[in-house]
Length: 150
Image (cartoon, rainbow, N blue to C red; front, side, top):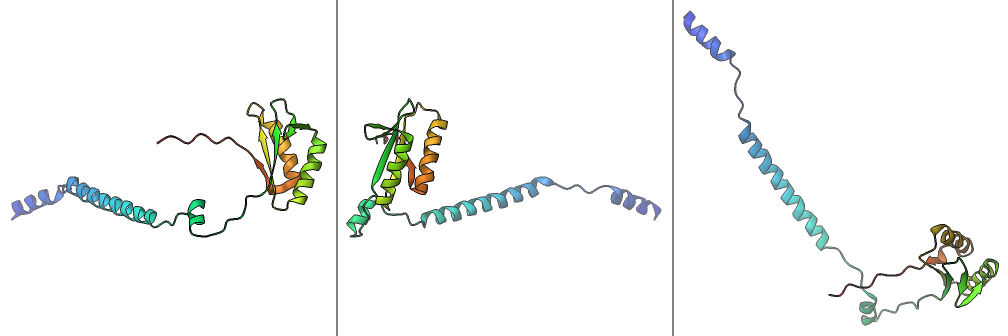
């Protein structure tokens, strides 16, 4: 009888082995399932987006669009000189002319087109002065890159 107890004790004192490979297989399968489900649900949400219409489509449907606002284009040369049209203008005269333009045209905007060789401090100073006069009706003009050919 004692010999049986000793054998049982020896067997019970051994640590049980846990095989991790099947558990890892199950976890990877569950993870793959959730990744695939989340990807398909995200794709469905993107497909239900209502995109805005282009102006050509809006005109084709008979919707009227407002005319674009009047623009006063202010140029800033590479030497830091301000221009309206081709006429050189001082800072004080520019401020007066911009103020008059915005008063006469409540929907009008002022666009600053600065030479790309200027440092931003010079452009920023003039832009700040124009913003003090016109608020959010002052725009900074940029050059759009050409459309890629298909």
